[in-house]
Length: 341
Image (tube, rainbow, N blue to C red; front, side):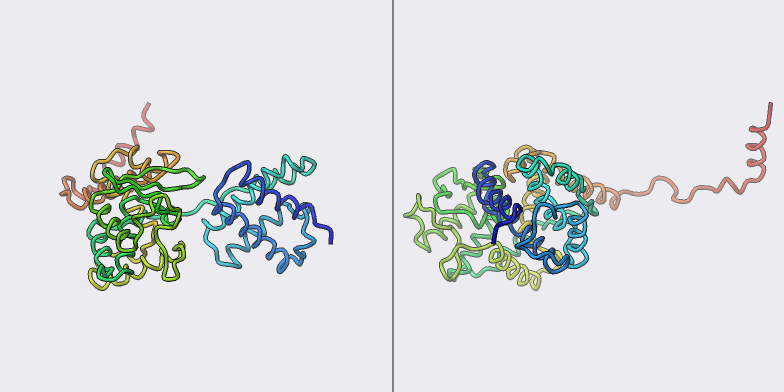
């Protein structure tokens, strides 16, 4: 069967253009791949367009809009997920404009589909006491417990994303003072993050326990599962969820309903901000490309301070003011002002 123009362009886009010319990470390529896998399944099951017959002529604005609606209503996806899928389609259409200029109008119509606004969400983070309780849950007398403690302490201390934690290799660790660790963020951008002395000590104990100290140049993953395979995002999330569940039984008042790996990242940023650390330093620690992204923590902290001030302040003005509208004589006088000459 002769391949379609869509299959040719998509294959070239995912296997050559993105890794070769754009130098994007493998995780971004996988995210884009998943988007088009879902789109093709949608076209096959809902639009009755076989995948082997799907061509660029089908890439029209109405189809993409129906697909986005189906994501939310048919699959129950969040607005964030819907927007991520649209971003992947937008990126592909930008590429197609130059590869297939004869269909530029159709691609530009898809590019005109806007990102959907979502309600502002409260920035979730843990208190210092909440972090302490969670880090107390792993049993340090076992190898698994020591791994879990090291993983969670390092993730909080560095403010790392969950994928950044999964990608850490032994060669990225520097324990000689000053201890640092290299993280690889979005767009394959790397950054060096300093480690607090307590975290460095825990990390050294972990590496000594698992005989990782003699492999400073090794690209072996720093954290691995029982099968000696690299920990995945879901594996890290599972470890955190297990410790959070135990912590909730100890001090539920310090543990919010939802705690994810990203909650540790938010918590680290908020605690640094509250300690007086400059936003520029927090931006560099988190690996944000723009300080405007980091400013969400300053706004959240300002809202928190305002609420605390309102709760602590004493009312200086009466909460109920006189209803002067009930003074008929005053009303008549005011009305006469408008008719006087």
